[in-house]
Image (cartoon, rainbow, N blue to C red; front, side, top):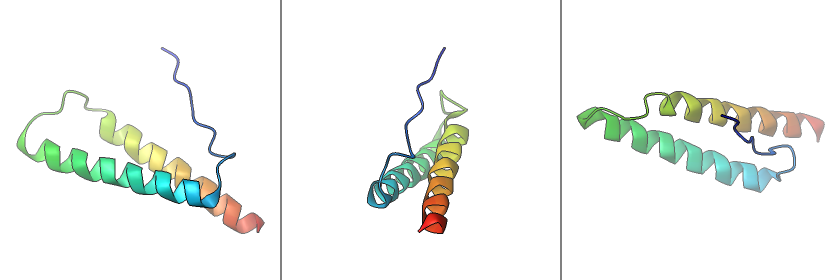
Length: 66
């Protein structure tokens, strides 16, 4: 299983903000969905949190460069 990573370094700051907002919304929906029932993909929340961390890291690196 090979996963293709997104190229976050090539994205602009506004695109990174949009990506961050969508990932946070997905994580919020997943948490509320998990309250009532069992999730089929138990690793999904962990992968979403990691993606959020990657986006935040890239945003911080871009802000330090400018």
